[in-house]
Length: 549
Ligand code: NA7
Image: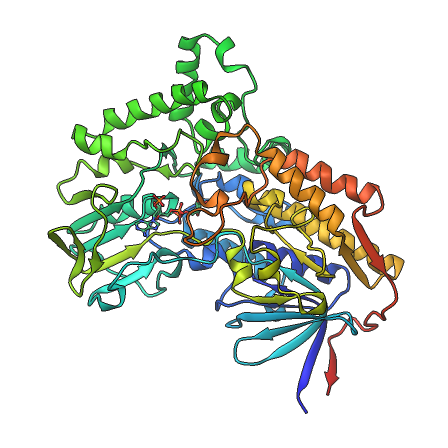
């Protein structure tokens, strides 16, 4: 007879969303268990510990906003905080809220099956452990399923190699070594500019370049610290109202009604300013009007040409396949200057692709680049990838992976028809997918928690969205992409960075305020688009119930 623990809720993932969800479930008096693959909290900030990893959001706009105590007690040291500090922060929060006692670490969820008759989810952990819960809440992130390229000979390499999302905890000494980095997305850029400082020889293997923009980071002074603490309500209010949940928001002035000299001066100010200002604080038209986009792209190309000494290398670093801002803009600190260093070489894989990885390094055409280390900064099977890696089965054994084979279908990016009592935090087509993520995570968690509280109050045991509501939401998501230049560009936003994945829009491009209003309207109309039922008994105890069979 095997014992199966039962909880009111099981949460998958102990990152920013899973941690806050656990806290809120406890607040409702519910029993909950979080399962986490890693041996610590932090999610993205636990796994991505590669050199140079840091926020691209202003630190003070990124932390949790729900607790004044947490805000008061934590001081960020830099405007864009580095990974070790971010991981420390999330541990500080976990300890402060005493979360770890309900988190089972080193526990990878491999399957979750809805049991129709019992109205319970049975969750299976790698190794065979099983638990059951009334509610299953996924908090698995949109960029957590890391992916390696498919290159012949990868296993034959005699040096060491890692994906950036699985960087070892033990220190790695790259000083004086021959290092190769594959990939020049937001991650590659962070790692390249850091490794270039210490490597003997750094070779960057680039497919398509990205438009990178200065982060303009600095330490937070004492005076700024005081200002930040006093300004938290205003900071979070600005994030609440802005399109992407950032302190930056689009300039709605019609681009061509602003004189060109004024536009140029505006670009220059944004380029010298902090963070995503040049992208998400720019004229909205730069992301919708090809002529406006061409102008900002030309401005950015000029910056690259001015910063990179060798004109041939500069041209290799200027994107030709997409305009500025139509893919995620990597934030940089002296990234372009790296290519002026004698110890750095840029290899254009579009000109000559990698032939194979050899025991000694990377072979391209006639040349073998000898390497001690290979760093794969090759990205993620974004948004739906982490779902695919769990065998999730809803009513009648329907597999989520099958249902989503042509692209995700969800309601509000939070529920799926045929999968009762399953809530997705930051699911596909959820407003949190294109957002300063903790800002939208808090909204997601609070919405789900309020929904469960509503069910408790009404003595409801099951909630499930309808196919009609799901189809309408999916349609709405696609409508929000109309006229946006990035809908036609190859990137993880549309899943086209993953071989074999059907290209469909994975994120919600309607903006944070619109997403929140949609969620609020659903509640105001009595959870419109959901069907609830009270026919199945709810666990009475708030303590875990042990079922035997
Ligand atoms: P990205 O943005 O998906 O970047 C991955 C990079 O890896 C990108 O430059 C790719 O080139 C490159 N890549 C992928 N496959 C290959 C192969 N086979 N050969 C060579 N190069 C390859 O991932 P990141 O981790 O940088 O960033 C993901 C998000 O994390 C980011 O948007 C932030 O929100 C945080 P390509 O673009 O396909 O030409």
